Image (tube, rainbow, N blue to C red):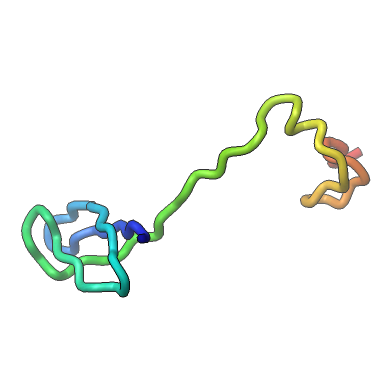
Length: 73
């Protein structure tokens, strides 16, 4: 069940709504207006940090260097 984020065109309030099945019309929780825009939702990705992430082998995806961390050398 996706959670959609909306912003009301009338009062500017932002809110989330869980959508069951297909998309259905959302209304503002503050003023009740049906004039709402669906916002672009962001999500978090959890991964390794610190030296474990820096030691990852393989070519750099940004510049093509033979190893990560060698950009510009």
